Image 1: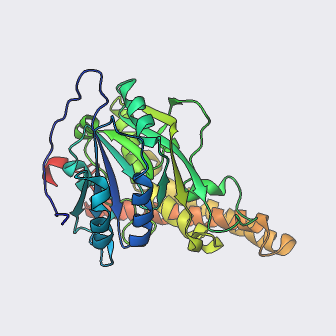
Image 2 (image 1 turned 90 degrees about the horizontal axis):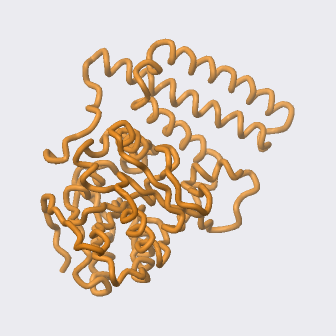
Length: 338
């Protein structure tokens, strides 16, 4: 039976000429069927020469997640572990994965991805070619049906599509996404873990935990790399193919961004500016509604700007209030205290 384990850091230095050990970490919350499909794709990895483990971070699931992991155990020998994290939230689960990981590299995957068989080989190769703090891979979208005509290529970024070309190259923090993102654990020790006031909590669409951590790594001197050969497919849930999902995603995304934007941009002037942008977007939405109709691309684009501006304005207001009360979330939690 798969146990629920607690472990501290175990330093693992790879042998000369061998790739580093990689801990594949998959946080999950009540998506047992999606997790089953993701684990199925991991059975096809071409990774015989790469030392690795698979950590399932069960974020207090109440569905059949434990049974799914148990049934898959025999296909992964002793590489598969399930760890329960009772504190609700994606970043709590990610921080637990960092502490539990036995590898030098912690490779995060979402629980709804199809992993390319060569993914782990590409990841090991990328980390072996330099002292990169983080490596992000490519992600394409797997739609449950034909992509709706109103979804543009730019909108696909909100569905976590990642494609920056066919060449390996240095990356910026906002170019790498958490569904396929790996870190050198030594760099995480230097800067701390994920901020727990960001990213998903249950079904709430908070975000930004990966971007905020990557920005912190950049400020500390860490290098980021985009590796197009480390490919995953992201299964798009049917409920995300509705306009209101995009409005919610933008609202919560920009509300989250306000929590880690520079202090000089998050004051009263920034709040007034966001309210002004929201007003302009509202006027543009009304104009598009009258001219092109409620289902038009023009009206959809203007309404998305409302959602983003209002979310950022409310986020800045919440940050100002937290500062006044002296209760803003620390920049980075100490991994040793988790």
